[in-house]
Length: 82
Image 1: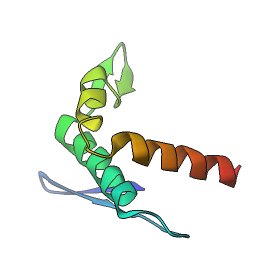
Image 2 (image 1 turned 90 degrees about the vertical axis):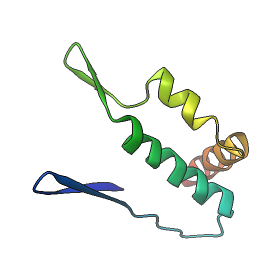
Image 3 (image 1 turned 60 degrees about the horizontal axis):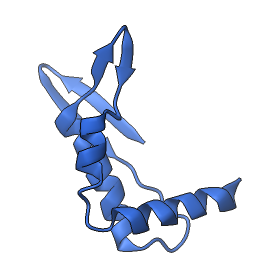
Image 4 (image 1 turned 180 degrees about the vertical axis):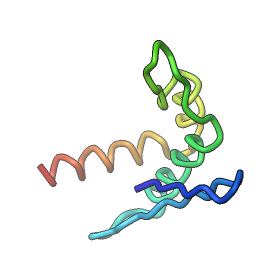
């Protein structure tokens, strides 16, 4: 969950990660890396639509060293929840 609170002109962001089972540290690092890039790149508005996962975002996200392993873990975990 990503939340933001405005304080004057300063925005504070925080990420809450709830871990209900053993999760490798590289997965947590990946989630933080992903959320950091939302903060770094912001949101683009195209034809009135907000776009957060732009091609530039994808390039930045895939720069994480364990990107593929983390994505595979998250995909497998999401399938188990369904």
